[in-house]
Image 1 (cartoon, helix red, strand yellow):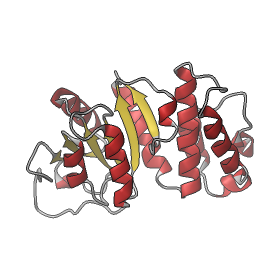
Image 2 (tube, rainbow, N blue to C red; image 1 turned 90 degrees about the horizontal axis):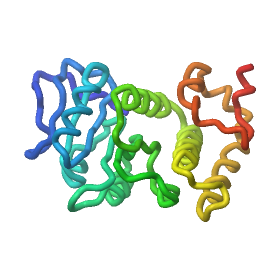
Image 3 (cartoon, rainbow, N blue to C red; image 1 turned 180 degrees about the vertical axis):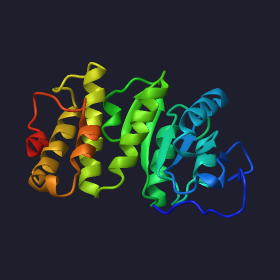
Length: 220
């Protein structure tokens, strides 16, 4: 990811609509794009994140796509928005080719449809400040690593949220998610060579379960 320019602009609007960004004095910090049609939610998340991140906001899917560029590290995306739905927005985000981590932050409970959704994390509203900061920190950390680690994190996160939502392992597309995890774990032997121990603990805590082998023993 490239850092946002440290030029002389202040509070530069990235679109003519609601989108906003924090002052360029924050250049060098990770950049988070908050996308939600509810202004109170946008402003709340932006305020909670502003102490540690450069934050932009957008009120819709099209506005988010206008704001999105290579400076953005993480997108927090509402799933239910009027006009362009959140699911369609994330598909279009992926189609841009911008290398960005995307978390769905929504009042919609996780179901099997998240298996095929190209997201990295799923947060169910209401989301408190601690949960929001933890999720963004994990996504910023996982962005440092290669695609295999990123996909492994996304698969583990989806499994965790589905099980928290009461989806059992025998349900439909859950099996596909399990197969993806097994395929990724086939190359897990070299994870220790590319994943910092501290990052492992922060990224994968609360995502492991007793039903699968884990790379945790690499750090025993």
